[in-house]
Amino acid sequence: MGFAEKSCVDFVTVLASKEPVPGGGGASALVGAIGTALGNMVGSLTTGKKKYAEVEADIQRLKKESDRLQGEFLTLIQRDAEVFEPLSKAYGLPKETEAEKAEKVRVMEAALKEACSVPLEIMEKCGEAIKVIEEFAAKGSRLALSDAGVGVAFCKAALAGASLNVYINTAAMTDKIYAAEINRKTDALLAEYEPLADRIFAGVKEKLR
Image (cartoon, rainbow, N blue to C red; front, side, top):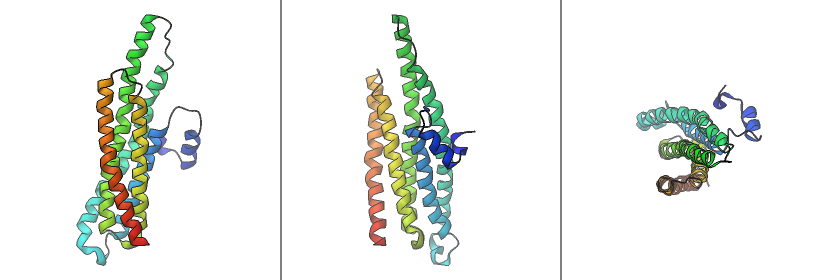
């Protein structure tokens, strides 16, 4: 059974344990899925309503995008675990001889690069989800506006959480040029989508108060 198929209780229990997976990356993917689903709920409560007939096509499009993103986030929970396990094993490789040290560095570097790929993808999906929720907040039912706000807050948290899982791996890389490039991509995603999420949340809050 994959981590995405576990009950909430089982997932939280293993997350709190000393098991190496799931960790912050998988948790970020789950939070992203939940945030996206909250935006999707706005769409579900809007579609088919006469009051919102003019935006029906947009809402249907947004719901399809949300369905896709939810599935991708859930897949990334398992993928994050799969790419982290080789890294956790690499940390335990022997380094008594020069040959062992060289082999450990080689294996570690490959594992670190792979371990960065999933949280970076989670961040990209969070950016997509934040833009989708922006439209839901603007066009969806006013009765579900708070859900759009909670959803965008969750996606922002997932974005930030996944970024830390990138940075902790790039910091351990020996290939500093590669690490710097990955950090630049991560920085750019944060710079673009954190302020956007904040603006959406503030807009929702202003309308509710």
